[in-house]
Length: 231
Length: 215
Image (cartoon, rainbow over the protein chains, first blue to last red):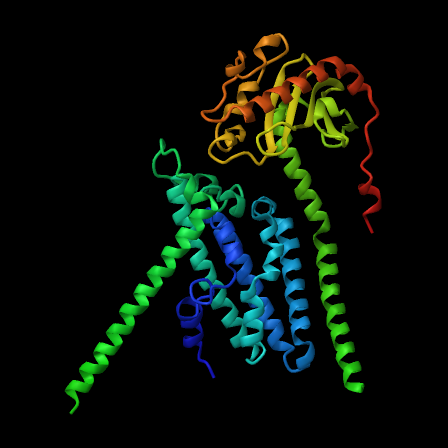
């Protein structure tokens, strides 16, 4: 049985959907051109993961092996459509910017992957928690990539926050949250266009591998050190 | 055999529950989504004609006309009519510039009853980012250069980009896009001035979905 600690570590780092499993890259690369877009898609995906994992886990004992995949797909498609309708009703501007990538969450392999490999075998609470952590891990990568591309490509951060948070929120105006680093910055188009997404993701992957390698080295060093001290 | 039947029934049951939930959400959010879409359309119209310039329900005061040579499409385009105390104020046209660098450029063009342009916005385009996309208000305010222009200001020769001897700026490295927009706006403006009285007299189109979609 996996512990909550393990699930957290798995979702956010060890088995991160975007950086380790390399799943769901199509929306990740397409939508990560600004912080708000990335956050919007990340949260919608997280919500889908939590709901689909929860439902799949609840029905796992009734679904026969032969039809489990169609049933999971059905669950996911229903969840995504419900989220899509609600987004249209409450965040229509954000919905319009994210466009086709909201309905396409259905085809995000992370979601069917977690349903099949985790939720189908684990109790409801743990499965929802796994969905939450996997979703947050995905969102984290999206947001880092989105922020980096927005800063380098447009010289701003948090632009168009009103798409998500409305005209006013707690006495502040999300429209004014935007940070402009350099007014005369002409923009660096490459970062906003698809190549920027590939380069950015490549750099993030490299960074994670370096950190993992350092961590592994440190662990093996302490182990050898302990071995050297022990006898 | 029995096993297959049970499995099939189970699958059918899940499909029914799923479809039921989606149908329920659709029913619950339908009105809200419609309201949001209308609000959004009104917001974009209000950038073309200032809300204090008119007092009618502009979204309902809509006619549909087909004119390929003017609007760049074979389909009927929507024309919204703004009035104040019953008097004609402005017409807002949807039009396409078919000769952009990369596909159609969809425009919203407002023409006041006195023949001046109240505003132009690009609704949708696929022009090259960084070169042609300056026509988009989010990238530059080039498009506001049309404000208050008319058929006499500038005259016929002025309605071109500077490269063609007119008075509208082109962008560095991109002439085709602004040229297409200038031409489309000019075409619609000429059409509006020629037909404004007829357009304001036309019977408004009743939206077909409003009556049938409600349960």
